[in-house]
Amino acid sequence: MKNFILKGDIAYSENKDKIKTIEQGYLVCEDGICKGAFEKLPKKYEEFPLIDCGEKLIIPGMTDLHTHAPQYACRGFAMDLELLEWLEAYAFPQEARYASLEYADQAYDVLVKDLKKSFTTRAVFFGTLHKEATTLLMDKLEDSGIVTYVGRVSMDRNGGMNLQETSVEKSIADTRDWLQSIEGRYNRTKPILTPRFIPSCSDKVMANLGEIAESQNVRIQSHLSENPSEIEWVKDLVPASSCYANAYEIFGCMGSPEAPAIMAHCVYSDQAEMEIMKKHGAYVAHCADSNMNLSSGIAPATKFLEYGLNMGLGSDIAGGTSLNMMDAIIASIKASKLYWRLIDSNSRILTFEQAFFLATAGGGSYFGKVGAFEDGFDFDALVLDDSETLSPGGLSIRDRLERMCYDSGKCVVAKKFVVGQEIALG
Ligand code: GUN
Ligand code: FE
Image (cartoon, rainbow, N blue to C red; front, side):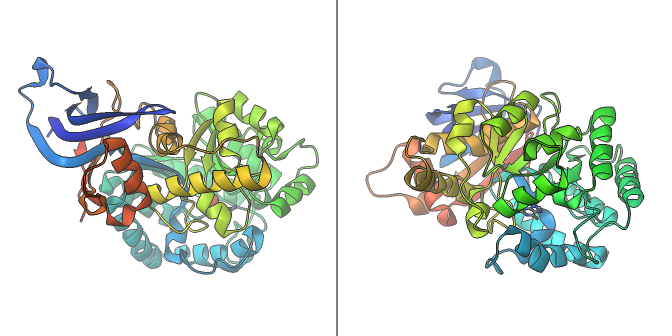
């Protein structure tokens, strides 16, 4: 169905501080594009078929701006170490298993099945260094209808015997071959260059990725200033850099406002890093759950917002344990309270409005006009049954939304649309 209307209780971010709500409103989809949310249906849309969602909530789909597809199979255990030790002990051995396409097939099936049922309509994934397994993941994501960027991970140093490209040349050739092999293959799935982080990539590999980004107009994602030992290590590895963000900048891996980079975490990003990110239009992927699990710290999310950085939320599976973006909303609010209490009493706490914005329109803007119900936006919508979370006497739509995020286990996704296409939830 190309043109249709959803009727129900509608909520979306009008801006980062305001959620607009419409009781029993009409949300119009024409050719995959949202024509707006209305209290009264405009005459010109009266012929469109109407799907009556009753009392259900209708909200924009959510964007997961940073997550590791191969680590979904090792989520929720082995969370007893800090980043660098955790990578070596758990994450890298897990990723090494994707050398087997049979393993990748099984593991990515589970991930994509869960993703379809989730609140996520857009996501940006790290794969592994394996070309074939990463392409298999892209095939499955394309079939799901969810819109994604997926990266074959570049890592030619410090990965250990089982998870490291064998030479600079091999790393460069694998990226080139992978990009060529998927050219023209997908509608909803795009490649993204993915230097794992500075400790994983030699100068030559970094510089090559910077060149590809520039010459082929491909975007880049990576990790930035996540953990104190990591940051110290980067200083040693790139002695000419003034800070971690500058190390990416030196190699041309910070992107541009037209093709912005995503930098995950930014827990220790100071004024100098914020300035570099702003200059390049880079996105912060704020991953509060992961930052707690790996004892990384607390990112100054409200400072980033006030400074005007592009930002969204990331689940960072398996540093984070949940694909559920409502969990990411709540983790980011709680983390900002601890930041205020423990680190900077002059900082502001993230409001629910702001956290909801980050999960929808904030992260969504990485994909274009995505994450709100304004005229001209891609039609990405969730129809949610929150009847199990309601209290006697009723709640406003805005309060239902907040309640639902705190009690999301009881919230059922009844329908999900991405660019107007209904996603099979089963
Ligand atoms: N930095 C480099 N690799 C990773 C990873 O897999 N997870 C997280 N959280 N940080 C990283
Ligand atoms: Fe990560």
